[in-house]
Length: 463
Image (cartoon, rainbow, N blue to C red; front, side):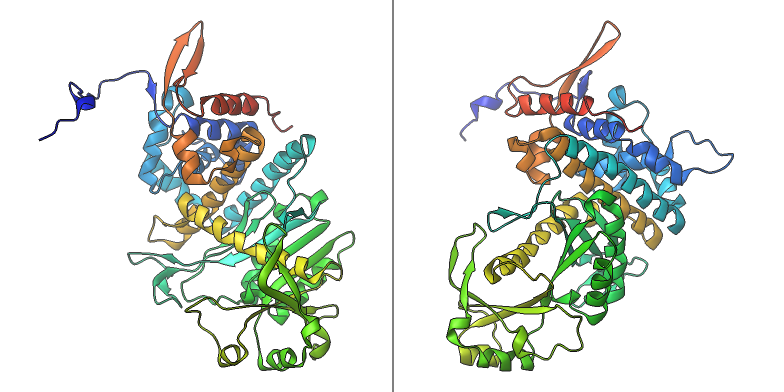
C-alpha cells in the first residue's frame, strides 16, 4: 500500500488555546454594531419591567450573523459562543429558542421598521461614497432607478410543520414569496405561506411590495421598477402599481410576464415580418435567432390601465423544448410581458425584463442563508426565522457594498465568501490592554479581509 508522505507523523489534538475559528464572521458582527442593528432590533423586543440577561436585539443579530456564516440550525449559535473571547457573552441555543418564541406579529412589524431605519443609514453611507449601485441591463445602467424583483419559491420540509402542505410541484412544505432589490442584492420583504398558496395571488404580491417600498429610503422611492414573472400579471396588481405611480413625486414602472392567450396568438399571425427586430443579449450585443415585437395595437386592452403595452419575444426552440401546438406549427417559441414604460427600444425593454431572472440567484443565495430550512414545527417561530434570514442576506450585501468594495471577494457568492473570508481562522493575541486577531499571513485573501475590517471600523455610527 502506497503511503502518503505529507501525513507521516501528523497527529491531531483538541487542546489548542487562543485560536479563533470563523474569524471573518466577526466582521459581520462588527458591521451590524456599526450600523446600529442590535439597537434597532432591541427596541421592538423590549418589555416593561423586564431586563434580560442577553439583550434581545443582540441575540437576534447574532442569529442573523450565524445564518450569514452558514449556520442551518439554532444549535449552530454555539460557533459564535466559541468566539466569546472576542464577542463577549453569546446566548445559548435554548435562549435563542425563547427569543424567537417571544416574537409576535406586532413585534415582527416593528422589527421591519427597525430594518428600514438601519437601511437608511447604510444607504446614506453608500451615497456619501460612490452612490447606491445602479441596476445594469444589456451592459447599460438604469441610473437612479431602483429595481424590485418579486418571486416565490418552494421550500420542502421533511417533517410535519404547522401550515406546511402539498405544493403545485408535488412536494410538501412552504411557498414563501419575497422581494429583492436588484441594485444592492438586499432581501427587502417576504411572506411565509402554506405550500398550497397560489403563485398569482395578487393580495400577497401587493402586501410584500408595499413592505418593500417602505424599506427603500424615501429619497430613493422617486423612480421604481417592479419586475415579476407571469404570476404577477393580474388586473389587481397592475392597477395597484399604477396607483403607486400616481403618488406625488414618484414614478413606478412595471415589467410583468404575460400569458400567451388565443388573442395574442391571433395578433402574432397579423404581424408583418418587418415588425420584428433583433433581440439583445445580456452584454448588449444582438442575439442571433431572437426577435422582439409589440402587439399592443392589435389587442383590445380596454379592461387594463391606460398606457399598458404588450411586447413579445420569439426565439428558435432548443431541442427537447415543450411547445404548444401553435408554436410547433409556427416554428418559434414565444414569450410576452407587459410594461407601462413608454420610451426606449423594444429590444432594450425586453432585455430589461429578462434581467428579472437574476432573482433566481437571489433565491438560491437566500436558501443558502436560512431560507432553505425552517427550524420549528410552529409557524410563528418559522416566520421569525424568515425575518432573520432577510437580515442575514442584508448583512452579506452590506458587507460587500461597504467593506469589500470592488475587490474579488465583493463578487463572491455566499458559499464562496464563507470559504474565502468568513471561515478564516486567526490567533487572538493579548497585550497592553488590547486584543489583536492575527490572520494567517499566507491566506490568499488576507489583505482584502484586513482592509474590510478597517473599513468597517471607520463606518460612523447612526446618531
